[in-house]
Length: 213
Image (cartoon, rainbow, N blue to C red; front, side):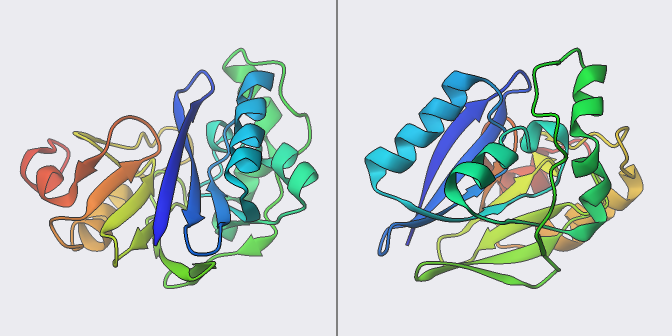
């Protein structure tokens, strides 16, 4: 059984998540976007106070706001980063992209993927599992992480409540809409959608009310 710890971070109000397997206290961090010292400190405090064993970083995609904290987590906890290879170029240019947004105090090192994920992969966290769903469009390598047993899906920046991801930063809008319709809206209606920014929603609600779909 998973428990999800939510840590909103950085100027983009990105949703960093710590996903904990309650049976073992094994955990992964999804989209570590911690930028400021206090955000890193809060993350470390959670890991320590909860007695968690961090086993991996998993990124839904490699845009800058989702990887600001990746190298610090790698350094401190000795874990590897898993993502789709199609997003590698974004990880290589985090500092340059940050400068374009006026953000200067970032780790200058590239964010390097260690493990290549593919559509249909299973990620094991303790005694619990997540299904990798390829959702290209916001970025070429975008994924969602689905837990059918607990009926939730972490959608990164592909699907939001009432909206979809922007595609002007290396994406493809037509591909994104096709991916959402074929890969996400086909999930059960009562699946909770947990996006990379903003509040949660459900598959049913987005089918009925999302103006982009």
